[in-house]
Amino acid sequence: MKPIRKIPFEELQKRRPLRRFMQWLSKVAFWLLTDLEIEGMENFPPSGPLLIVGNHFSMVDVAAFVRTAPYPIEFIGGAKTPNAPPVMSLIPRLWGVLPVFRGTGSHFALREAEKVLNKNGVVAIFPEGGSHARQLRPARPGAAFLAAHSRALILPIGLVGMDEVFEHLARFKKAHIRIRVGKPFGPYEVTGRGRERRQQLDEIGDRIMREIAALIPEDKHGYLSEDAELRDRVIEYPWATRVEGQVEGTNIR
Image (cartoon, rainbow, N blue to C red; front, side):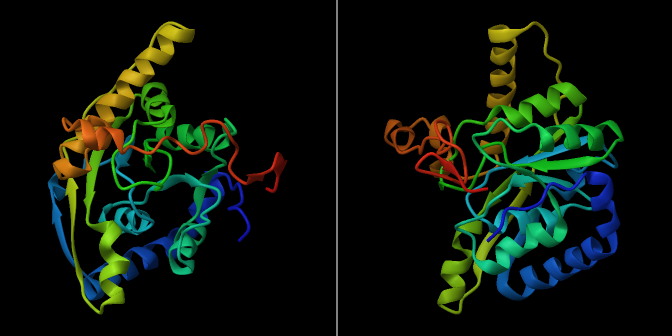
C-alpha cells in the first residue's frame, strides 16, 4: 500500500463532514463489536490548544481516539501501516493524518501540527512512535517538542484491551476494552540549546509516559515497570538506525 500523502492541515479541514460521519460510525462499530467502557470524559478541556497522547499497542487505537474525542482532532501518524488490517489502515487515510516517515527526521508533520495548536486546535499523537509492542516504551521526542513549542495542555489517555479486539472477534466474542481519560497537565517550556534542550524534552517525554502509565494496568508499564523482567522485554524503537520504507539501503517511498 502506498504511503499516506502529505496534505496541509488546511486542506484536511475540508473533510469535516466525512470526519463527523466517521465519528458516528466509530460509535456504532464499538457498540456492536466490543464491550466498551469509557472513564473520565469530564477531563476533556472545552477547547484547545490541546495535545492528546496515549499508549499505542494496536491499530485500533486510532479508531478509539476518533470514538472518544468530543471535537475534531488532527493526527500525527506513520506514513506507512504495513502490519495493519486493510480496514484499519483505511481509517487514517479517510480521516487524513499528518504523516511521518519514521527514522527520517522529517519535520512536515510537526510543522503542520504546530499550526493547528497555534490556532487553538487539537492534535493527537502516540509518543512511542508506533504500535510495534504491547508494553510501554520510552517516548520519542516529537510529543515533547510539540508540547514545549506550542505550550498546549497535554491530555493523557490510557487504552486497555485494544490489542485483543481482533483476537476476540475471530472467536465471535466481544473484547472488554477501556478508554481512560486522565487529567490534563502542562503547559511546558524548554530553554537552552543542544544537550541541555534535549534533556528537558526527554524529561517532558518521560512525564507524558508516566501519566499514561497511571491509566493502564501495571503489567503493561514496560520500561517504567518496577519488575526488572518486564523492563527487559521492552522492544527498542525499530527506526532508531534505519528509515521506514527502506530495504537494503534503497528508499522505497
